[in-house]
Image (cartoon, rainbow, N blue to C red; front, side):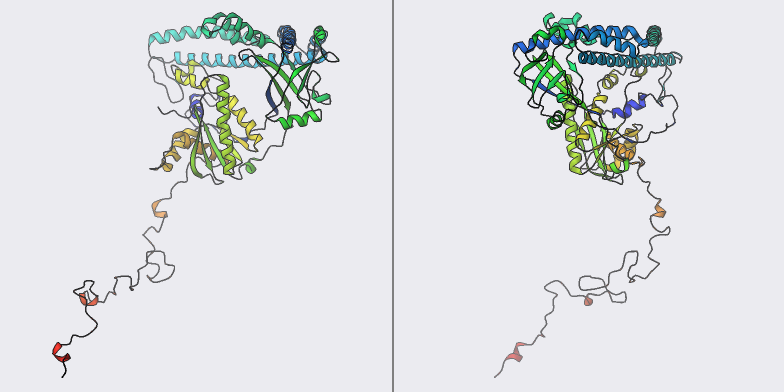
Length: 564
């Protein structure tokens, strides 16, 4: 089964949220732009050689601060849209005696970010419900069996299906009314620890978990061990401090100060940490006391503790688009199981052969993330080998109109779209490309697969090379990033390829130098051509057979050779 490039297919399905009406005309294309560099860095390593006392201290600190974070989140959700800076300061003052000023600041900031994220998710859900209601109303208004157009769905196939969709429309309208009222009132739904894990409690046999295993995961997800960095402080953080030698010390909350094993109410862990990835950058920041935020979390499945260090990077000036494309570009067409790429020169011509970088998005989240990083690593190394400084990708956004009402019974397509990690793919590519000195250029995904297959697939296909629709789409993406049209140059009419009345053999003589036409070869030792006035007889040529070859000496009778 041949799958259409999902960027183009989703665009044609209307997932971009723009130009998805029933108008058959082409919409205006957005100009390509350089994707901004990442604004932060996050690295993770494992906490090793921890004793039982160390783990017990981490558990008690995480549980205590997690309880405070849950209460603060409840207060923030209660305030809703009426929340202001004074309410924020009040919450922080209430948390300070139970922890510390810095712990209270980290908790209130994390609470505000979580509320804002829930607010954005509520808006996305509201837009999804509106799109579903609009699609159902449109299809229910059409006669039964009416065929749809290329961009708009038709009517339902039977009366039974029409009745079922009418009932679902009423359900979605009621749900939309509730969500709209909640949005206007500022109410959000947040679960500390995750809604998925909370629902798993009622399906333990299906999840193959015992109650104790689920309880361990639930408690670990609700712990809070995160501290914000401070510039100018020792090693960039006063709450969770990691020195250049890897020593980890934690400032204990006030109720747990009795567990300290170091001065000033601090607890020093037995194990040491070392950051392998970007370790040099981390050490440079620690040496000059630059701000570094830390987060300690526990994986109950593996029984391991991890620490994540993160910091902000200064905003670098954006590379001009013309400078990024000065050495050509590599067009990348993202698909469900591979990246189809092709290198283009500065004139927009594909050079070499197409390359594919496969990946497998099945399995766990860690496996999918590893597959993406492996494919992107090979892509970036190939780009550096080619000497290209820019990579062109589609500006995909699958945050709107991913409803089953719009796509009908296309379950495989809906499953494909829902499983594509577009946000993570773009974030990974931007971060990894910035580390390797490459630039990412985003282009409009409209018609890339369709026009690429129409204008580039057949001309580039040969007996020894088979070009797919995805390979042709990568050429279209690269040419759009360079500002070239996606169509190939039109072949001139036959009359314009030479003189209308034939070749230019009448403009000069046959022996004239520089003549534009087939020249006559003069007779010579290596040709059988003869002048036009020569007789066509065998006497004019030397026979090539032995019998016909004449000797150079004249024949003399033997009687004349005898002498006395």
